[in-house]
Length: 331
Image (cartoon, rainbow, N blue to C red; front, top):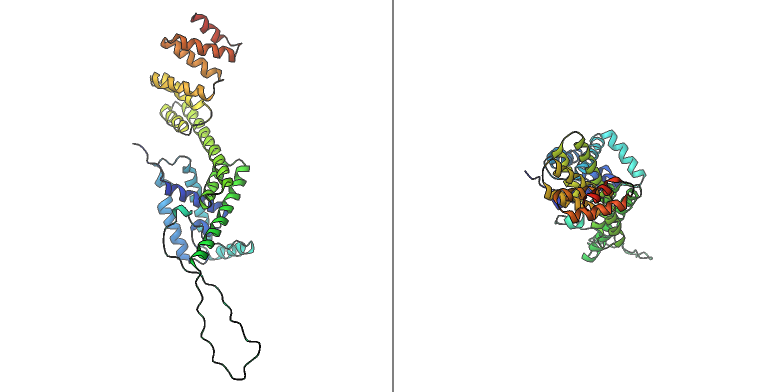
């Protein structure tokens, strides 16, 4: 049965929670205001568990986001343990106030924000007092109604808040990027580009982090597949090699190892040859890849193809006897 992948909204929310745990407060992680009641905190936590507990995604194709699910669950649990206890919450509130980090919930990216009514803000107005007092007492004027901000002012404030949020995520992602934490960097930078989609600097670094994160994930899958091979678990190895290939890694190892399994254990020569070719396209100067496919071509009776690849292999390693023996045979 094919496992259902996460949809775009689920992916965005996972990234939002993860970024909140990296650059926000416990209130940001739970998505509640600093003035939230204990019942609100507990409600937010239980709602998260019902929707995002890692066990609910066991049969889903979440890819690298399985690790994000685990991280988010740990972060939300930590936040809940602090905020549900009156003494620990009081100490935590004092700490974030001391560092000027009084929190408001981190909103979802603009593209997925739910529509709803906004509470209008208010401006403080002052009434000028006359310099000269009047001889006669005057009746107190009725209090003036505060003027709600205009639509333009509300939009301006909203955009400013989004730009500030984008900068926070960008700075966090940049720091992770510089430390080589590609997956974490990709998560924060993704949110930076959602809040400020026109920022070329954010998009460029996000693209770089995404590429590096994808390659790192592919390397992890190849390592897991090779370990499975070592234990004789060919089905698990095949599944992990296929996942690695789907990420289009720059190296040819996943293609080559999967081809070896399909040729020697699954008797699927057609698929194996195609994978050998892709492995060589990724690494055209890899002696092992070229020599193996030359021998496969020879076994299939494709003499010209075998001779061509054996010649390439001989040039790559002039001291190796294998290409010389094969070329002599093919004369």
